[in-house]
Every structure is written in C-alpha cells, then in structure tokens.
Length: 99
Image (cartoon, rainbow, N blue to C red; front, side, top):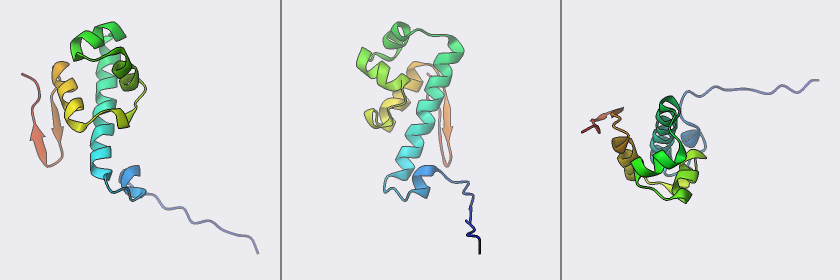
C-alpha cells in the first residue's frame, strides 16, 4: 500500500507555525525589515546613503540589507522607518511614524 502524506496550509506566520514564544515580535520585525528593504530598493538608495539616513554603522546596514532579524529590535526598526519618512499601520495598533 502506498504511503500518503497529508499537507496542511496555514495562513499564519511561520514563526507561529513553529510555536516560537516570541512569534508576534518576530513577525513584526520581519514585516518591518521587508518594508525597509522595499523602501530602500524603490528609492534606489546606496548603502552609504542609508547609513546616513538611518544613522547606522556599516555592520548594521549590512545586517539590515541581509535581513538579519536577530540584530534589530522592533523599536529600532520602527525608528528606521521613521527616519525613511515612512508610515506604517500595525494590525490592532495604528501608528503613524512619519513626522
């Protein structure tokens, strides 16, 4: 008899699917990192320009561009979005970051 595998689809985050204790924060940081990367790409900014705008070191910019989620807190990523003059809305927590 052939073995059959059951596949289930989950619409939640991979962090929640893995049962990580800090899944909400990881999801938030992941979304912010992706948004920052998208803004940088859309504006065609060079790493040097991003360093000046975000007041980050070369190491931090490298980590940011590579999506190293563990290098940044949610608050630091929110500040980076603010520095890029971006506004974000979190589910359940509307928050305008643009000045």
